[in-house]
Structures are given as C-alpha cells and as structure tokens.
Length: 270
Ligand SMILES: Nc1ncnc2c1ncn2[C@@H]1O[C@H](COP(=O)(O)OP(=O)(O)OP(=O)(O)O)[C@@H](O)[C@H]1O
Ligand SMILES: [Mg+2]
Image 1 (cartoon, rainbow, N blue to C red):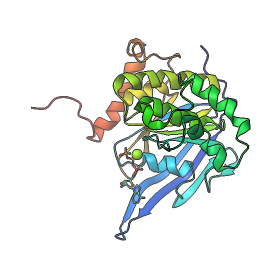
Image 2: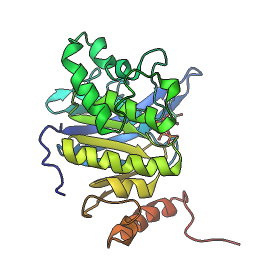
Image 3: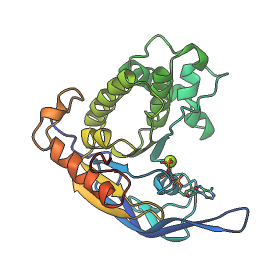
Image 4: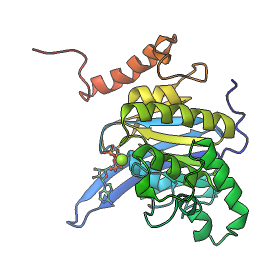
C-alpha cells in the first residue's frame, strides 16, 4: 500500500509561539516556549511528551480555541484566530451528546455551521460504515461501547473533510485490544484520505507506529527537543512492527531524550 499523496491535506506553520496562562490566583504558567514547526500537507505527525508539557495547549492553539501569547499559527495561508473550517478535532473523551442519535452526533458540526444537513447525510453514513458502525445510526451514545463512541467522534471530526485532523490522546481511555484496532483503522483511514494529522499521545510505541515524524517535547515550558523522521513501510501492524528494522531504534532514540531529562529511567536501580 502506498503512503498518501498529500492532496487535500492542509499545511501547518507555527512561528515562535509562546503560551503563558494567567491563572485565577494571578500566577503565570509558562506552557509553551517559542515553538517553531512546519508540517507538510498530508503528513502524519505525532507529538509525545510528559504530562503538563503543553501538548493539549499546542492542539487548542491550532484548533483556534486558545490564543497564543506570542507568535503566529497558520493553516495553509490563513492565520489562526478562531476555529478554522478545515480543522477537525478529536479529544480524549468522545464528548458525544447523549440525547442525539449517532447520526445526529456526526452531523453536529454541519448543523452548527448551518449547512444543509441533507447534503451530508450520505457522507455521514459512509464514514460510519468505514469505521464498522453501519446500522448504529439511530442508536444513542449510551448504547455504544467506549471504542465505538470514539469512532463516532472521529467520524464527526471528519464530516467536513478537514484538511487537518487534530487528535488529543484519542485512544487513551480505551482497552488495549480496542486501541490496537483503532490504531489500524486510523492508519488505513489516513492512507485513504491523505489529510494532515497531528496526533498527541503519551505512548512512544503508538507515536512511532502511526507517524511519519515524531516530535518529542520537553517538560513545561514545552519545547521541541527532538524532531524524528519515521521512515518505516506502511501499513504498520501493531503486532508486527516490533520486528521491522528501524522500529526499535526509533523507540530507543525517543526514550533517550526522556531518560536524559530523568522522565524515564534507563535501568533498574537498587
Ligand atoms: N486554562 C488554563 N489555565 C491555566 N493553566 C493552564 C490552563 N490549561 C493548561 N494549563 C497549564 O499549562 C500546562 C500545560 O498544560 P497542557 O494541558 O497543555 O499539558 P499536556 O501536555 O496536554 O498534559 P497531559 O499530557 O497531562 O494532557 C500545565 O501546567 C497546565 O496546568
Ligand atoms: Mg493534554
């Protein structure tokens, strides 16, 4: 299978972006420090880093949900000042509305933007079909498992064919077997669509399995400590990738960054 051509994917450019939160107690929290990053259209970029290093902050800046203290973020040629129509977001929790059917949840962004619903119904059905949820359109979120709900959230993010898909630890709450299935599904979907993906995770294996490029962030204030290309053949299967030459080396390289900062230990200590 070939990697996607990149057509349909948005380009991302982040220039000297710093984010300082002002807390209610008047204290400043320096979340991100002069981040510079360019993402090629159609590439799959994963971002790993310790808890609190600013990963979700970076994602919410790109989603237009938070404002940068300094610097500029661009998606294609437009500067991000508010949520961009070309961007779809998947959060760690599925955030589905329990009183709406699965189909109506997927169509929510269309309704919010007051676009003609009818024009998107067949696309919503096709997306649900692609993630194995054909026949669940008229069910409600509480009738679905966690993995199924997260698939619905992905369909909702994809309904408007976003050139950029932002995913914030989307599989963190899933059991290991469902997560493995979702990793395969996401990879297959991306290979078909060719959109740009920024995928945030705590999991180094997950990052190397999915991405063309892994960004390793330092503890707060977040900076990019390592920008590593992952040039492994696709599709990458979670059960087989450990045997692919280069996989273990990439994992080791990323671990070494964390070990050097004392975030991971290199060996057992008595
Ligand atoms: N709205 C806010 N107001 C004040 N501080 C915030 C706010 N949002 C995040 N922070 C702080 O900014 C820092 C970065 O937070 P962020 O949520 O981006 O981290 P993260 O890397 O996503 O962590 P995790 O892996 O635990 O999700 C943290 O110290 C957090 O407490
Ligand atoms: Mg986070």
